[in-house]
Amino acid sequence: MKHFDVIVVGGGHAGTEAAHASARMGAKTALVTLRRDAIGVMSCNPAIGGLGKGHLVREIDAMDGVMGVVTDRAGIQFRLLNRRKGPAVQGPRAQADRKLYREAMLELTELQENLSIIEGEAVDLLTLDGRVSGVTLADGSEVRCRSVILTTGTFLRGVIHIGDKSYPGGRMGDRPSVPLADRLDSLALPLGRLKTGTPPRLNGKTIDWSILESQPGDDDPVVFSFMNTKPFAKQISCGITHTNEATHQIIRDNLSRSAMYGGHIEGVGPRYCPSIEDKIVRFADKTSHQIFLEPEGLDDDTVYPNGISTSLPEDVQTDYVRSIRGLEQVEILQPGYAIEYDYVDPRSLDAYLQVRNQPGLYLAGQINGTTGYEEAAAQGLVAGLNAAASALEKEAVEFSRTQSYIGVMVDDLITRGVTEPYRMFTSRAEFRLSLRADNADQRLTPLAMRIGCVSDKRITQFSIKQEALVHGRGKLDALSLTPKEAIEAGFKVNQDGQRRSAFSFLSFPDITFEDLKAVFPELSEIESPIADQLSKDALYANYLVRQDRDIAAMQRDEAWKIPSDFEYGSLSGLSNELRLKLSKAQPSTLGQAGRVDGVTPAALALILAKLRQSR
Ligand code: FAD
Image (cartoon, rainbow, N blue to C red; front, side, top):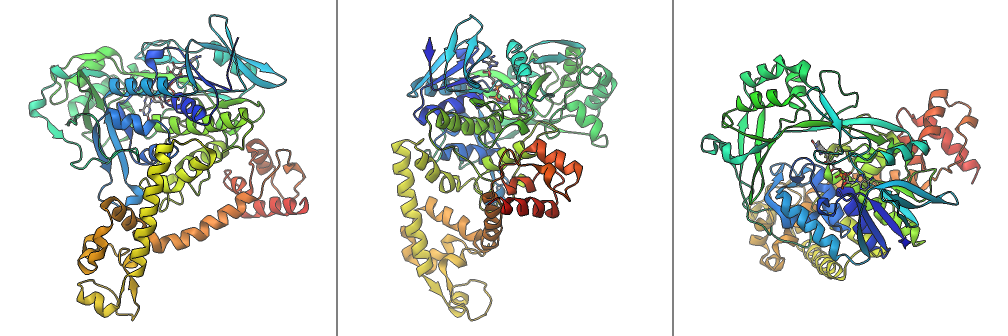
């Protein structure tokens, strides 16, 4: 019988990241997945990153993960979103060549030391002394381990809907995962139903590109991995078109035939990724919606029309798509569809993504009620590091809200749960001025080095950069001007008599590093990526002082650990409603308790008093 430290079930975005993270930790890891050639498949849009999501990818990369590296290899159009806004809310995004992405992910997975791929369907979980200790495959074979991570995405009891037709499926072309869902039932895990949808895929050869607006990528592409400086593949443009009154009328006339509006689906869908039916109903006064026509690959004519996901019947899809400018003659290669699937209420997990009452079982990705490749991969990283740490009897790895978007997401999921598919946004992070995409390596690579999941090459590169930043900062702090000298240099500053360092001049939005170099030529020795990073740090430096106080307050609350057998019932003064909510949520720190829906400062004071008593 085969024996591993960690088994990861599912080779999607959570699964690959989990398997790599576990293997990098030194754990002997198996990736069990339905099809080897489907490792890294992008089920929906061929794009990685975006607002909030780009931050997650950068953080995964800072921990030496694979998503950023693979995206740089497969990216065919890179754009930095919110370029005109502050660096804290800018989000790197890349459209990927679907085939290149899959091939690069498979190649890296095959090359990863300590990692084996097993093709097969996991149908059951094995247990030993109350701990999950392996999986049974559909062919009856058993694979043993010390920790299992389930990352089965939309496959658990998945049902595909197109109009009034529906059939079981994990995604188009794949069978659902039913026996495993039944097994989760037997563990009494709280399961719910969610849904998501995808648009029809179009034949690019039948689109009239000549009449459409074209959108190129950025001239200076911002890539994902801190190890890379530019994209690997040829870069291309997308087309832009719009729905119109005729499109909307066709959709309105057929709403009752849509799976989502015809009452065939009970699951809740992603509010921030609405179907075209949703858009027509919810934004009834809008006469047009933008559509990005995104080529799916360099040698692939398939085009992904971003913005018109649907579960209307195929004949209606053809009608409404052909009412759109440039698509009058278009051929649909694969119809759009909706999928409904089981998810596990993530409040049943701890901060390491381990099921609270089931040692050895970890869950990551869409199975936890999230949506998106990046959210899935980030959870995969957390579960992979921790399943390996547990199997190797090392210290668990926790990501905090004060340190990373990954920490924000895990904390949101495990304390608040989900009522709709959870997606990352910059607005979810209270400390977003310091949790920037550009400084993810500064925030997380030291942690990765400490726990030992990072390659020597990255350590060397990170250390060189770190030294350059310290040196550059030292220079900027040492150089200064009086207000009079500053005015003479052409800088607009208050005549407050205060001498300012070159670093503090950079906090003025209209003073650039180039302006400073004109005054202090010695700054020319600072290379431009380092100058760029220091300028971003300086821009927020004044705000960060206040934010640091808030971070310290949160860290104080996080330091108060709440034992898992804490009796909320014994707290007189706490309402029954809060007793129930807190007992269900089982927050592991005072900070987490404060973020449970409805918990008031007074309730926190009661919990704190009790914790103090038992110290
Ligand atoms: P997946 O990528 O689904 O991977 C699951 C893996 O598990 C697969 O490799 C599968 O083969 C394997 N597997 C399943 N069961 C078993 C088993 N029993 N044994 C072995 N292997 C198993 N995201 C967005 O952000 N926006 C969208 O609009 C959007 N629309 C979507 C529309 C559709 C129709 C679908 C299917 C997905 C959509 N997504 C969307 C979601 C996106 O695809 C997922 O969020 C992401 O792929 C989740 O990653 P994952 O790793 O959790 O699961």
